[in-house]
Image (cartoon, rainbow, N blue to C red; front, side, top):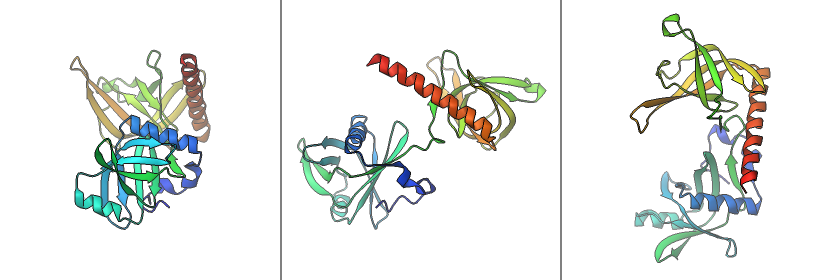
Length: 252
């Protein structure tokens, strides 16, 4: 059903399949409202078109998609035996498919039309799901550094997941070497406890602020974290989710 999605993420794809029509419509509308780009893959060809959702019609059971600027590609799309779509919504991968696609017109411009997919896949494994940590009272991690760099140094977190954390290194102390590993790091999770684990730098991003200062954000993966420590992380993520949901409920 999803011929193009062969990566390891989909080994247990059925665990994340959504069949609720109401939820599918909501997700598709969210993708359209946020103007998220969608990769449309033509089955049987190494052919990719970037499109977007223009409209979702519950009554007509249709999803209207933008057409390609390449007329030859549009012809290939219309004769395809099947199409696969991949996009993201709020940093979560969304996959769906269509057996056939038809030409249509939307607001005077050429477009494509597919039926509302009966299912879609939302890849939001718990270990990949990141949640932002508080800004006003940030969670902190202590990383043991050589004495010339200050020894045990504390850094605030930007977010946390069951796979790792994002560290804010605004003083550029840690460097940006991908793959560098720091052992026996200590993360204090408020009301939960202290997590001790090794961290490996997986990505680095430098952001220039309006005052021309530079912020460095390091994405770090937990290395051989103990199950008991991971349980602390899961409990803390659940705590943050509950607090966030309570705030949202209070605003609605």
